[in-house]
Length: 498
Image 1 (cartoon, one colour):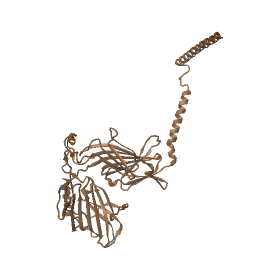
Image 2 (cartoon, helix red, strand yellow):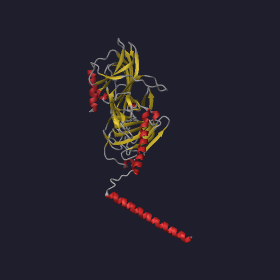
Image 3 (cartoon, helix red, strand yellow):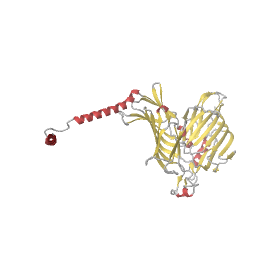
């Protein structure tokens, strides 16, 4: 059904396509689709030329609605030749727009160029689009020892509201085993890469559906929910705790799980099962732990250097398609690596998403717990997200700590960028907890002294009190009588000796 809907949508767009926007022409389009994991990445290099009478500052990008629904990340940046020294990438602003007189079933994004494109001028930039749930397992159910085959569908022609003079497409799959693929004019396969084109002088909204059926045994790890709690302590530590609810989103496992089969056939270990996950933690991460509802899991490995700390974790059992697990990862970071000061305010600078490699997150909630007494709180993030504030009561708190809560859905590793939380904090507030401890200990000893010296009896005329007094006097008299007898005998002995 998914394939039929996609093909129908492509043909509908072709039939109902409006005339091209005459102001711009795409001189060259080079698309590269990476299908090497369960996250689909499409990198396009566009050379746009202004063929109109006026200066143009915006370029439209078009995606079919069925594809745009799974669009997790979109970035446009200037095209630069590959260099040995990596430079920071400056992205262009992108907005969702609804232009008039355009065919239905298409979502448009507007890219703002850094400078207006004058008449006859050209500009080259790169577009990175990242999609989740774009690969469909085919078959949908497999056995424990079976390989995983997936299906991908797209168009061999670049969907654009402009005329495209020259374009080409290449698809990179994980392995050279390709079950089937759509064959068009100028199609060739080189190892694990399928190439289409080049195609010349295509009108606007041209499309040609293609499907690729190939082997992909990489684990489809999906975090249905991830809650990250980042707690700041001005005594020198930032504590990070991450709670994962994980599922294998690949082909569903059919039949019963057998431990005998992998032992009897060493080469069969469940090709697509999630056996381990890798997280890249900050370089000076310390006090790292990994546990679930049962307790600590010792089958983890931690190694690091001056650039990163790598944590390799293994679930208690290999996860097959449709299986779930839940666990917690925690670690500490030096305060000086995350907290800075600027213009009388402090700000936390830390990554937003999960450090797990190739992990898709359906829902991510980040909670930043600020020290008690923080004020004038604000957030600076590289992308839009929901945010609100809560209050958390912890040990030695009086009014509670401010908690900044951020929430975003459909995340990919490209979202693991730095964000900042700004706030004001009085240094004298750091003395609050030590003074509370000292005061508590002092008053405790004062209370003990008062209790030891205080008369806690209810009444000095009660029967119990009088009986107690008589008993104490009796004991006192008995004790003195015994001591008197001992003293008399001692004197008698001395006299006899003399």
